[in-house]
Image (cartoon, rainbow, N blue to C red):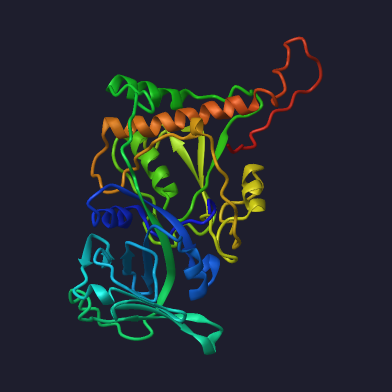
Length: 370
């Protein structure tokens, strides 16, 4: 499941977690666009024990869902079950009024009372239809979409207790002074690849839609300029805004000289057969062969990273001014990216030519990617 990315963005996930009295975490078991929109497949993903959340993403942009405190059976009491609606800046919760009808399960239907119902359409090759309504089984939802409500995605998540986390020390030790921020900034401005045949480095940002790749570029520029800046077509659409390759020089200041670092933003990694960045695309960018404006349309697998390669960052999103702490997190990540460049080429870069060497010498400015 590591390569399957939930459609639930961070903001809505945080809203969802507010509905529970204890800290929880979610583990995705099913995604319709990946596993297929068949109710039998959804039923097969339920464990014999456990708690679950069903999420339905509507074409309108709203997210509706239901919580089950136990696996579904033919008809069961579930006083802890509830329905919810996630909006961009709010969450609504609807508790059961008739616990005996809180969850109804049949071979061709999964329903929360009569408010949220997924039902098989046998004549359409066992696809799903969604019915939404208000029903006396739950606190009145005022859902008026009715039968055959258009939706784009269905997900099933297991609800797990987050438990208590005991940290024996900071995960990453950082200094948080303006002096340290300025030192990290100067390291970026003065950076030159240790491999002397390289003049610049090109860093390819990879991740699912909405993961913050474009915002990271905005944020690094904000750090260098000392004020929050925006690039065009940056946002939090579920499908993402970046549709093709675009490279951005990181300058020492607004209108200043470019540093040796270039950040590349590309089409997001995806799950489906017609979305996402392919491995050949990524390799083309790495080798410097993909021209600016280059497009693709297939899936790519997400690879794991060791913990030593994970660094916390906070992008500038709603802020109106930069802050020292956020700058330090961003610059620290960039510092280790550049360090990785030098580490990568230590074993592959040919040694610098000796002053006594004869014959023509060649250098290259071909960008590289880490």
